[in-house]
Each structure stands twice: as structure tokens, then as C-alpha cells.
Image (cartoon, rainbow over all chains, first blue to last red):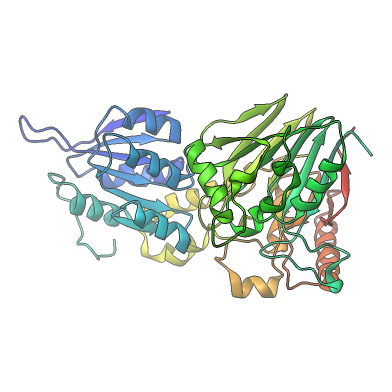
Length: 150
Length: 304
């Protein structure tokens, strides 16, 4: 299933909004991502299985990918390996946000060039900080500072 | 012996335990044979597959089998270099496991036999070996549907749900059931009220994910490696405490649970204590779920 959500913030005239891809089957996690990007000028594309995400990413660019390793259909590291071997996403920034946190997975993810490997859960502000750090043109009045508690 | 059965050829996790004190339960690492008439499926290829290979090489009727691997840690593949049918012409062996391509799967298998780790390489295998990556969709082998799910274990690791002849089995030898919620609990106070509501939903989702793959299955063969005391020291190592396994199986209305991947540190006496306690947990929940240790050499009929 694919759900693509346009966010509230509008890009400058003539400027395409950066696309953030989320590959995660958790409805609660998806809600956290949606909540996080509301104040940012980005589009969010959410995929709940490896097949649907790969079908999309085979033909579309992404400015940042959030990847859950426990995605239905395929191990997340295998999915990432497939993305890296393809034409479009050899260098796309990828952040693993997962409920599966073992050192061996961290090492393999690092070898596949992920920007960060984070154990769930993340706060909305942490997700916003990651997007602003890794995506050019993603900014907004995102509220509290990088380490502030809500 | 039933024509449709499961047989345990190896039940020990991590490394072989060939000690007299362990022989009632068994010392070989994971291999479970699923026999459906003349169809033979070996789940994992730990040292248990060596004796299975010897048994197959002695008979004449069957010349084909499928080996399905959960992952490539040694205890799950170290029997393959000694698997007799692989060295015999006329055999057809399909090897399935998590991988992105057939080449990658072959590489993952053959690497353990390369010099200097082993005296002969897979070039000496005279059987027709076919490598088939399990990457996205379920496979169907002669009417047996096999679907995979991600397990909580270091590195890419699958568990399998198998539907054959009206029975449903799940094989998950390495899967840490209690790992998933600890970060949510430890960080809960950092989150605002709306986020905390989502975290409660996330916990509920994960509670469901923990048992969804085993819901209502006829037979569950699942990781139960650690005692309570051992798990206190080894949380995050990728294996389950048997108490979590029993409770998850009860939550999922499993009919028959076989505790699997026994800790090599546990001898027969220690495992007998675990089994008695596990059966007590089932009685406490007033369930009629069958629950016992998987024992090497034991056969479970799949006939009605």
C-alpha cells in the first residue's frame, strides 16, 4: 500500500518539495512521521512493504529514506542492498529507525552507507532534526530546539 | 512411522553439545525434517543435518530435497559440508534462504567451505544444487506454502510459517521475543502527551507483531534458549527466554509448542527443570496447549 501525503508547508515558487520516503508498517510510527513533517516543506511518501517501496523507488528519486528493518516481505538490510545496487539510490541518504537493534545489523547498515541507525522510538523533534540535517530545503518553524523537551 | 511428520535432527542452539550429560535431549545444532510423503524439507542445516543426510543416502526412493535456511550463523549451516547427498550424483537439492540473489545465496553457503576453513570446496558437490533466494514473496513447493517473516536476531534472519495438508507449522529457532518494547518503556517520559499515546499504540502493535506469525498454529517450534537467570545476562543477544516463549504461544492460541534452540550450557537435568516449569505456566493459564522440549530423534506426526 502506498500513501503519499503532501504536507502543509509550501515550497518557494518553482521549487519542488523534497521527498521523504518512509518504509515502515507501523501505523503509530507513520503517525509520528506525519506529525513530525507538518511544519516542514517536504512531501512524505509512506510504504508498508518492501515490494511497494521498491516498485516506487525504482522509478522515483528520494531526498531521504527512513527505513525500518522489520518491514514485511523482506529483511530491511536486503532491501537496502537492493536499493544501493540499483540506478537511483546508490547515494540517497538513508536512516534506519528500527525496533531491531543489534550490533551486527548496525555494522551491516553502516557498510551500506546509512547516515544513522536509531532504535525506536524517536520523538517528533528528533525526526525533524534529522530531516533538516540531511535534506537541503527542508525547514520550517519546527518549534522547540534540538534537545528541548516538549 | 507416519508419512507426514516432523523430525528433530538437531535441537541445540549456538554450538554442539556432544556431552553424555546432554544426550537425553540431544547435542546437535538445528535441523528439523519436514516429511510429507516423498517430499523432504530440511529446516536449517546445523550439525543435525549430517545424520539426516546419512539416512537419506542409505535409501533409494527419494533423490530430491529442499533445504530452507533461517540465516547463516554457523550453528545453522555447519552441517552442510558433511551432508552426504550433496556429494552424490543424481541428487537434486534446492537451497532456499534470505538473500537478494541466487549468486549471493550461493556465496553465503560456499564461503564456509573455502580454504583455509575446509579441505574441499563446493565444487566437489556432485548433486544438482539450485539456490533460490527468499526475498519477498511466499513460495509453494508441491502444495506446501512457505512464508517468511523477519526475526529479532542479529543480522538478516527469517522464521517460517508452513502450511501443508491442512496443518500450519511455524519454525522460528532464533527469535528474541522480549526485545522489542524496552526502548519504548525507557524513553516514555521524554515524550509529550500526544507522542505517548502513539507510543502506547506502538507497544500494542509490537505486542501483536510478537505473536501474529504464530497465531493459532498447530505446531510451533520456537527459540527458548535461555533460563530466566541466563536471559538477565544475555538480553539483546537475539534469543528468547523460555518463559516469554510459553507466554507468547499461549497468547497466540498455539496448539502444540516445542521449546527449541536449547542452551548448550543446560544439561538434561537443567532442561528437565525448564520443561516442568514451562508446563506449569501452561497449567497456570488454564490452557490445554501441549508444551514440551524438542528432543533430538523425536518425531511429531502431522496426520489428523
